Length: 554
Image (cartoon, rainbow, N blue to C red; front, side, top):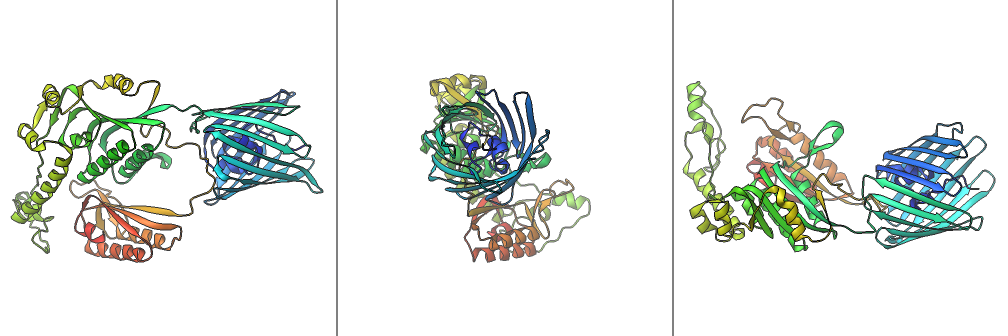
């Protein structure tokens, strides 16, 4: 009799297919693949009960049959991009120890191994899994070897004719045939299997959803509030506290291609986006609509930036007491020369070029004609971009401010509602049963089904802040006008040198959001970026500002 405990779910049948909670007893190395939270129960006709809990890469198990209790702990770790190791140890009287290895170099190939040490004997299990047609068809074969002989072998496979529904079977050395079925609906999975002499059943619930047997229509609620930095904010134990702007853009673009998502509702609160971010976000909203998804915007108040985004939507709604404010574009500069004169400070700068305006606030009390000229050109370009999106902008600017009733009368909005009325709007625009999910609070990804690890990457590097020599970081002292994020030449140089040498990195995207800074640091960074660009493509994406040294490294 094979010592492996056969799980009803297909993944637990082979050491090569094992992952998540199904891996705890079949191959603990599988806990390192697609880690998450999952609880699985298994029972059979012989009154045997198993309970397995996977918590990321840690597993706990408990089983009972005929008043004999077995329990223990397991762990799986990632050894490389495509290799995983793990162990399981019984804390009961059996003191059984299992060691596992899982190798998945390609999407179509998986190799598994498990060593078991029991009181009376030890044995090895080798398994090979193949997916000739992707994750919808899996074939496996396992063999159990003891010291003297082949104790058992199993050959089987599964087919997934409908997303979330698996039909499987296997044949063993005792010439027994087993057939089974698994089906999943989002976070829940059921399964049953059996042969002429045995019947098994399982139930599983997980934090991460699976491909669903019963698809649900979904609407994503996107709450835009505050700002989105170019760099992620991290909290305790490295958890992402605040997603970056790139996280926002990539997630929206990815979700727009999911078939079960039917639309997006953007709730605009006081938010702060650079002009570049506004344009990029608007382009993503355009792609969402191109992919056949409906887009709805709601805000208590629309400024010109918010309305620029909303103009891309199918429907625009405004609070009945709100306003649409389109006052046009302006730029304001602060000057400190008189304040410095009062405290006896005389600033001195080396300045090259008439349009080099960064030092003007310290050496003058008014804007130079050259700086005024370039700001007018910039505002004109931005205005022309907004004019393409907001129809009749020239005439709208003559009025500039519209209360809710005027905005509706001038067709600037499609309706006046309160935020609490959005549920009725969603029911109206998306008839039938619809599930609402909030962006970033929804589970970001499904349970991982593909085996292989990516063999090539595109690296994404952010240069956000003032350019300085040394290492990147935040200013330790919050001094107004002088504090903020720093881009260090030493940090950027090391990053691009590693990327240049890494054969798996096929291209680099450099996001620049910097007003410039040290000329020396800019030169060091420029050389490192150029050396990398000589070996592989380097694409620059400019954010809100790429000036002086920021433009030079671009």
